Length: 218
Image 1 (cartoon, rainbow, N blue to C red):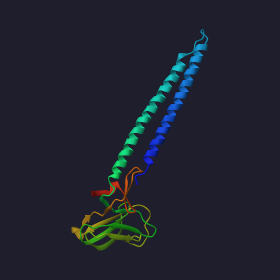
Image 2 (spheres, rainbow, N blue to C red):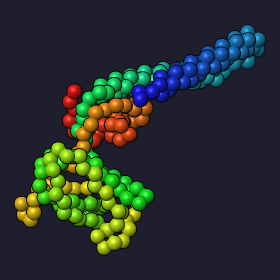
Image 3 (cartoon, helix red, strand yellow):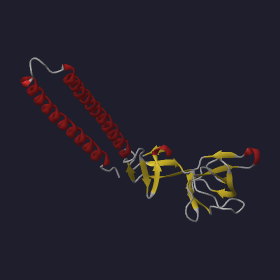
Image 4 (cartoon, helix red, strand yellow):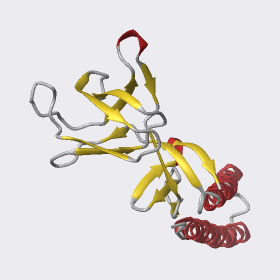
C-alpha cells in the first residue's frame, strides 16, 4: 500500500506557504499605502523618523527570507518522500529473507515463525530487553522447514514476564561446540507501506520493517 499521504502532505505544505505569502503581500501593500500617505501628509517641520519604517521594512525582508527557506525545505522533504515511495515499489513481488528474532508478548502466548538453515539439535533461548535469559528449550529442527515456536510468556521458574521486546536465539550443537545461527524467515512481498518514517513490507499479514530485511531475490 503505497498511499497518498506524501501527496496530501506536500499539497498542504504548498497551500500553507502560498497563503502565508499572500498575507505577507497584502500586509506589505497596506504598509506601503500607509507609509506613502503619512509621508505625503507629514509636517515638514517635524518629519517622520526614518528608523521606524526602515525597521519594519527589515522585518518584512526577514519574513520573506524565512518563507523562502521553508519553500526549499518543503522541496527537500517532497523529494525524500518521493524517493522513499519509489524504493518501496521496488520491493513488490520480490522474495525476501528477514530477521524474525524479536517479538512482543501476546495476550496468552508469543509466537515466532522462522526457517532453520541447517538440520540438527538446537537450544532455543529467549532473552528479555536487558539480555537476561528467561526461557530455554531443546528442539530438533529441519533445514528449510517453516517452524512456528510458541512461548507461554512464562519464565523457566513459571513466573510471568512483563511487557517489552523479547529476542529468540537459536544455538546449534551443544557445549563449547554450540554455534549461534540467525533466526530468519522468508516470503514474497505482497504489499508495501511508505507512509511512515520507515518502509514496511508485508508478507501476507506479516509486517516487516525494511531494516530487518537481509536478502532480496526476484
